[in-house]
Length: 126
Image (cartoon, rainbow, N blue to C red; front, side):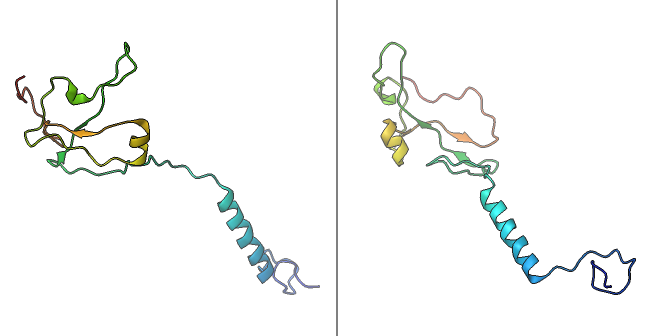
């Protein structure tokens, strides 16, 4: 009688059975099916891509519309007497989501730099 584990004639053999090509194919199919059915853990926000900032790199601060609890009509940010950029207000490129929600993203005069503490700077006087 041959050994059920390795087809040798040793009755006390404890080796694992050899994998046949059919067993390998079944294992591969089961593995691929398990991976295909596993839920992925991740998210994506349209128009938002991660960016790694370096120390001292300029961070663009943008402004949006202003809303109120007293009225349902939003105000354009620069319709109120806020400081405007010296080179003029520039509208940032909008993605489809911003367009559909009515957001209007504009440039601002604020100067921010990554990991650079700044205190009490005068932006402008209105």
